[in-house]
Image 1 (cartoon, rainbow, N blue to C red):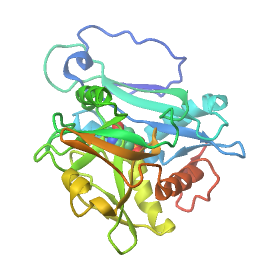
Image 2 (image 1 turned 60 degrees about the vertical axis):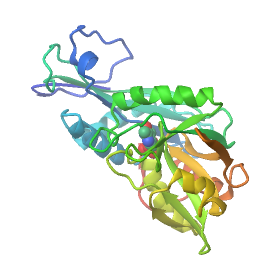
Image 3 (image 1 turned 45 degrees about the vertical axis):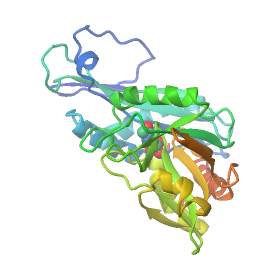
Image 4 (image 1 turned 90 degrees about the horizontal axis):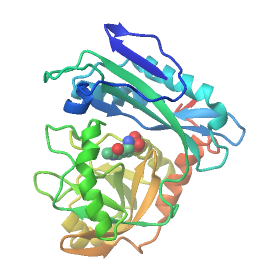
Length: 325
Ligand code: PMP
């Protein structure tokens, strides 16, 4: 589905997948005005097709556009484009549990000029692809590399926007993580290089028991952390399962050695692609440690089951999160 703006937006169009033809002077290639989203269409056991909270993706797309001096696509247009595409590709939405049709909405600057200023022409488009589980190990715990060398985002920067450059900057850290035998990188804060922020494409949670029962802890969103829709949904679902929640900063060194160590029962990463993926081991410049017993934990499993259950229609959606098509 495509929409373009020069002076006002054109009509939404459904096109077969095709290449784009752009001048080498197109501003996207030079100044990087590119934002995107990721969401999934699920098929329930009964066969109907649905999106999960697409209005949140539409709102985040607008927030990303504001940060990147790009036009704010009306939220209704974002959702209508997703509906148009999924409706036309209905048979591509897989039946198998854990599988879905992944949608990738994006907007790029398409004006061709070498002047450094916000572009006057943009393309908004959504492409779709069937997808399966993000990690080949399924629900097996992953090992993460906490990097002291590279930051994903700095205060005042673009970390809270889903813009292309954030991912380009993080690739080197992901490569170093792989060189250390880790599946994913965990970024620390830019100022002190102490506090957990997030992974390259996932938010992070700990399940902590400090005596008063298990608490789901995640760093507060700020201008350096992406406001994940999975994160927000899990914070809302947790009390239903008997977990209290807290948004507070977590110090890596404290987690490893200090007051937190014995009380962290579980850790996991979460996102549209990864759903809930347990973290069993953490490595970093100065050492490594195991989280809980190093395996997928019961709270991670329950949260994952509840969230996927709502998305796939097995658990009742009491919050109006499911967007039927
Ligand atoms: N952080 C980053 C940097 C991401 O790219 C993503 C994926 N969109 C997430 C967190 C998780 O966000 P969501 O739950 O909305 O997919």
